[in-house]
Amino acid sequence: MYFPDYRPRRLRRTPTLRRMVRETTLSVDDLIYPLFVAPGQGLKAPIAAMPGQYHFSVDTLVQEAVRARDLGLPAVLLFGLPETKDETGSSGYDPDGIVQRAVSAIKEKVDDLVVITDVCLCEYTSHGHCGLLQPDGQVDNDATLELLARQALTHVQAGADMVAPSDMMDGRVAEIRQVLDDEGFTHIPIMSYAAKFASAFYGPFREAAQSAPAFGDRKGYQMDPANAREALREVSLDIEEGADIIMVKPALPFLDVIARVRQEFDRPLAAYNVSGEYAMIKAAAERGWIDEKAVVIESLTGIKRAGADMILTYFAPDAARWIQE
Image 1 (cartoon, rainbow, N blue to C red):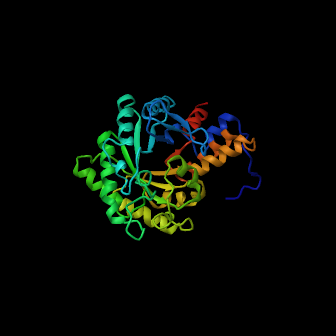
Image 2 (cartoon, rainbow, N blue to C red):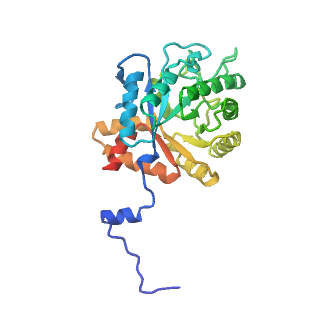
Image 3 (tube, rainbow, N blue to C red):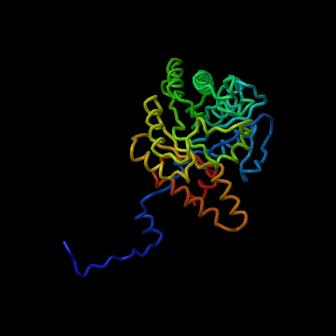
């Protein structure tokens, strides 16, 4: 029906009206806070490549977990820096490893905070790759699966509420699911780094986690940033293997992939706002080129608008304060 006198009108956007018509709402409940735990006591060492982020010892990490809980953040994700590294990354699946001790300490003090653990060997291997190596230097996918499952099991035995395999080995979700189920941990969800791209945006993280490869790169087992259809296949395979939550990483350069995954799959979807994305905003803000608060909230809202149900971001504590303001 045609109404000849009708003219579209712009809404007069008062603060209340803006809230009423807003299509996408960013909540503190959407955020997951990644943290780095390292050996020592009383440690809170700044990470040069990620201003505002720190290496925590177990005791100071517990204090940071309490702060996260008090800010209303629902969950943290733990990465470990071990005392020693070897060819097989054995400190990563040691029941008395750095992450295992951190999980136990946090759950003893802050039992209402969801503790997620990263499952990968790159921080623990002397060569910096995510799995065992064959004599020719290639990663041995199948031989790595058992160690990843063992690592996940020790995390859960320490009290982890969720495990997040980030290694990108084929079949690791099924292997972890089987081992957890066999040990009676059928209730523990798996957040799979299902579409993890071989991205240049990981640079600051590799400094923070001391996990840069000693040789070569990870393009053989991480995804080509040019591929979106492959991402959908990877997500589908992880769901078939038992992934409860699927993830796209990084976030901002791959908003199209997040949107396509959201459209194709009925699973909770996470997106990782990675270290390079964080560092760029921090660097520009420090120079006065951008308004950090406005850019962070706009970026996180964009990730949510693309379809993410949860966002892993180093901005989580600041964003929580800004959202509540």
